[in-house]
Structures are given as C-alpha cells and as structure tokens.
Length: 224
Image 1 (cartoon, rainbow, N blue to C red):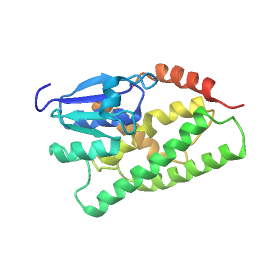
Image 2: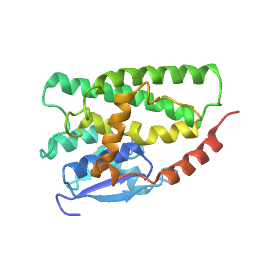
Image 3: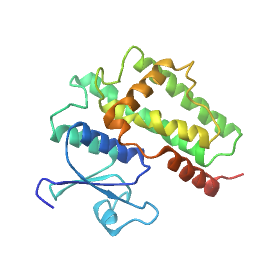
Image 4: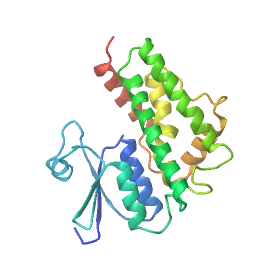
C-alpha cells in the first residue's frame, strides 16, 4: 500500500471497531476496511497484533501498527488535526478518558449478563445494579448537552457509542433493562442525537443480523 494509506482490521459487529470507523469518517480520512473472523483469525491479524490477537487494528503508512480502540482513537486525533475529538483542556481530557474507561467496565458486565448469565440469580442482579449506577452518573454528565463533546460528536461520544445501539440489542438478548427512558431522559435524548448523525447512522451493523448473532452466542454460552 502507499506510504500514507490506512487500513483497518475489524469485525462487523464489534463496537470497538466501529469507534475507529466513526473517528476516521468524522475526520475525512480514507481507509481500507478488512473484515476479520474473530473465531478463525487470519495470519495477518496474528502478525499485526500478536499480543492480544484481536480487533481493531489500525495500520497507517505501512509501519505504524496500533491496537486497542482507545489508543487508536488518540492516535487518529493526534495524527489528523481536522475535527478534534478529545477536549483541549487537560482536565476535560482526563474526564473523558475516565468516563470512557468506566463505561468500558460496564460494557463487560452487560455482555456477561446478556450472553452468559441465567435469567435470575444474585450475581446477575449485582451486575445489573452496578451497570444502572454507572448509567446514573453518565446521565448527570450528559444532562443539558446535545453530545458529550458539546455541539459536535467527540471522543466520549464515540467511546460510549455502544450504549446507543448495542445496549438495546443486548437488553433484548439478555431479557433485561438498564436504561429506562423515564429515568434516563438525557441519555435517551443523547442516544437519539448520536444515532441521527449521518456519519453514525450510515455506519452501523444491521440490527436484525446483530440480534440473530448475539442470540446464537447466548445459546452456546449460557449456563443454566
């Protein structure tokens, strides 16, 4: 590939990979998308990410190979200055990173509930309670704003983008509710704003296909 070409290795249903696509498109960066099968990993993926062996992986200018979605986002933001993602103020940048990491921990809990937990039990209820508590704090952060980034989509919006699209699907698969629109009106409004943005709306996996895929995973992983 040419000296400045960009390649992205990802998986169609991965919210982590979608983060990178959204960032690149917001900045107007052209890239080649390479679909990976995470259950039958290619030799290219194993070569480019031998430590974690997972997507996403960004390849830029032939020699720059970056893994882990949050690290890739920061690389993109520093490399292509048009359309800033992270806030300029150091404290706001720190807050954005904090909430991104906090919500990431919540994501792991939600996936466990949806795909691996039975429909009842103390461990499940504890995970649901903790996830709702995180959402209460996120609700406070987004109240009065269109996006976490202000008037435009920013780093934290991209980091939390899974809440807007993946979480409702996971709720359905796991027979649970984490976001009650009446309890979380600001978050619900943000979800609508985020998904209405053309860059986001035009770069989402098909919901029906996601639902089938995740239900199939649950049938394989669930412990009754």
